[in-house]
Length: 324
Image (cartoon, rainbow, N blue to C red; front, side, top):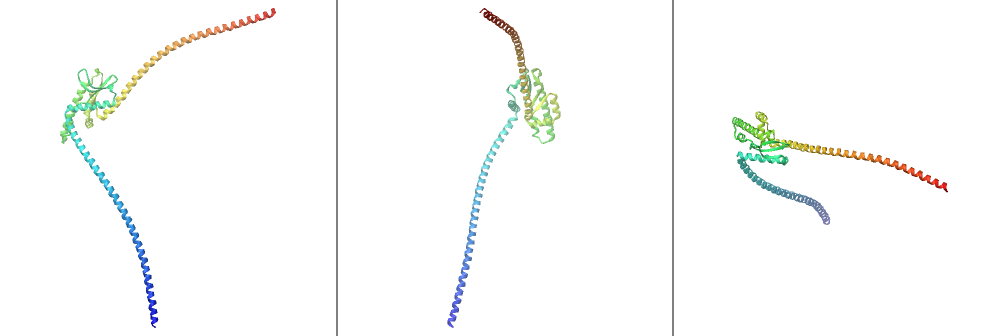
């Protein structure tokens, strides 16, 4: 009985041991699986952390570069602001200088001269041209044998005042004074610089150095009609360029006309030479005709002599044969 109980206990113990071993193996496998999964997750996490670190590093590098660029841009902007400030001071100083009518007139003359020299041939430009009366026009353009007078001393004082007032009534009043100033200048230019007896065309140009002033004048129809009646043409920097281009084409036409005249003169001389050559050629031809006739006559005579000589020779031979 004891042995039976011992045997049962032994079998039970072995079964328990086997079960424990089986459970241990199963838990070991599960632990290995869990460990493998944890390792894989750790690996993935590590890779993700590395990528994140790389991305963060790249972002930081990019941010550093952007920050550096921003700093450089701010530095350039600061330098530009300084330059703008200096330029604004220079412009203010220039505006103060331009308030003097004499200096402003000189500046207009300088700009006018530069524009003329940029477009037209030097030989067609006359700066500070003096007339017999002693009056001096700012510039003149030589077209053929005539001059186009150009005035650059435009009255701007009252126009400047229109920019300084806010009241429309005051502005209209000042514009009326400005129109009177312009008419007075028109009369002065027309009387001093349109001198057909001294070779000018019957019109003159008034150079207006400001597009805004030119626009304001064109709005005043009465002023435009008055200028037309006095044969004065207003030009601004932009429209004057178009006028100069037209004049340049005209100058080229004059040059072509002169060349054509030279060509015709050469053709006339060539025609005379050709006529003389034709006369000499006809004379030579006449001599050649006479020589040809003489040659033909001489050839006929030579042929006749040859025939006679042949006949005489033949007769002499026959007589010699008979004597023998």
